[in-house]
Length: 319
Image (cartoon, rainbow, N blue to C red; front, side):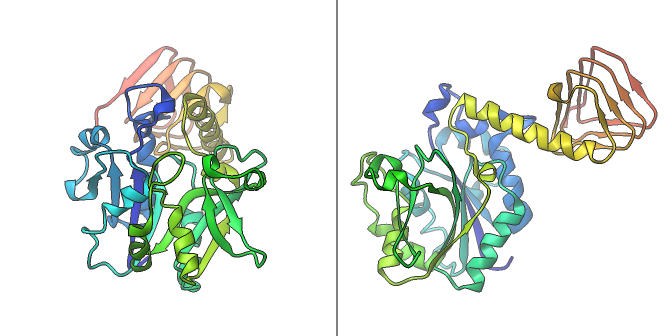
């Protein structure tokens, strides 16, 4: 896509994880959560993206990325404040921005591309990705008028009783016209329950200016976020099942699928038999007709055809 820039917001403290480690550095299968978002944004936009990060996250990522891609939000003052950090950097940019949080690793490439297509086709100021869930507690609600137009987003802590009954929620994934967004960013205030600058407030300011706002509704599983250890475990299970099912459909035998963990970059061939308690991570390729017995860990390694790997085996090669 031309004239687009991606923005991944990952400067939050993640207090509910109850650890010193930044939330998006927690591992999901074989890599930190943030790398799933970097991977998908890179597939769509190449190198045209920025990461808004905390100092802690910056210290981890600075060895892996060009420093001009990393923008530090010194204090966690909210998503609106985070995006403001890019105003002096994108001073001459007049295209669109795709904004997403760093903790939604299940989002599909197809959904993000469709969001951007709708945004361009309809020449919108903003196009939101939304979903509908039965229990919307904790999420920002999508507020529509009698015409069905989105007029604002209300955060859960600021919502009244009527608004809290709304089941269409904000996913924190947006496409914006950058010129129109940066005009309203200075209008966002921190006069709310959390004392933060909400990027969601930009929606209402754009609506009041008569700008076009639209949405794309996706399945709720795609936009599940990670805010605590239970949610990390839950999403790990979903991702593991999706990856395992993909390989089973291609002729790989999983004798105990609940105990087998396959990384996203792993390549499996036909007629492989996987027993139980198996972890295959990193850039691995397993050849045809391979049998892997119980309690095996393989990372960044190529296994040829017709090989049997015995139980209690550890095979790893540094990248």
